Length: 288
Image (tube, rainbow, N blue to C red; front, side, top):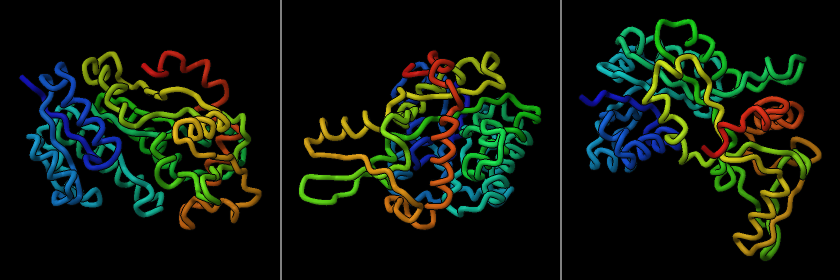
């Protein structure tokens, strides 16, 4: 009998990608029924999923009773939160913990949390706080103490970022600038977020084997030079790398994100996204 998998972030990149992967993978499609959680079931993306036979449930992550309803009857819960909706660490941590508490209370068998590296543990010094990393790491630490099978997805840098808030800026005809506070030889572990389901699938099918494990996931490591060269080759448009000298010059990032994002990139430049020498340690998780 198929088990119920409840997916938070259904209309977003990660949750939506997981649902699509399960629908397109016969083994998973037959093993799981799907429930998508969204704040607004009237969104076109939610309606589209409902038309494909996915149960859609509205929920507010700030209201515990709403979360209890969302996870009721679930065998597995894929959970995630969005720091950027409020920019407040305490809210994201409270939301993540509330989802976990609701899952435990409902007798859910497995919870998968979309986490990020613990910056304070990687740096071991007084580097600037990177809240949108540390909030997710705090929720992960909390979940590890609960009586429930856990798996932690730690995705690399979304390739899709370069198509949205971090896309190259046009400076003159057929010339664009990719503004990032790193050197040309800095490496980023990029992931096509559409591959979310591919990385999670083994944990869904073998929860006992993956209990408590971290899935550090990337498609491949690329230098900034390789990224801009690829943009130029694929689009036929010249794209150049620009390294901002100050926070104010980092114009590609919205003002409300600038402080947090520059601190994050500063940390990554110094310690790496997944930590020093991560490329060697993650060979088994790259592009699988």
